[in-house]
Length: 199
Image (tube, rainbow, N blue to C red):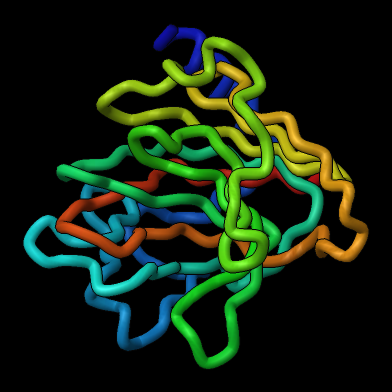
């Protein structure tokens, strides 16, 4: 499984562009009052805190908007009740800490599911395969998200977890990509090797 994940990750890197230089938050935007919840360490963007409660959902977003793309990255979580996610085709809510849009979920019981953050506030599709519920591991997980038109597919460690086609024509098909750390008890989420290929 590990070798398969590395092969898929390597194949997807061809023609892609890195969104994270491994050292700084260049190209990313975080609200000033939330800066304490985000840092770069050991080649990863880390959200949350292992010492303090997370007072509310917090997001660090790309400066650029994206529409059709394949996004690959590695994610891991630490803590008692970790909860996080990857926003796609999303917007910041004006004068608020929240974002609105699709979220590729991260955390025990949520990995690989597609949630509609601050909009319909529900999971949009069941798992795409029987193997999806057991796709994750305790350390780094390979996450791939592919958006083509109204179709959104997601894989974790090479296993298809979501295949969703949006039927609501009013839902935007472009927006920012963002990394989330959810509110709650102390935990950390780490994101690294973030690469995007626009389609």
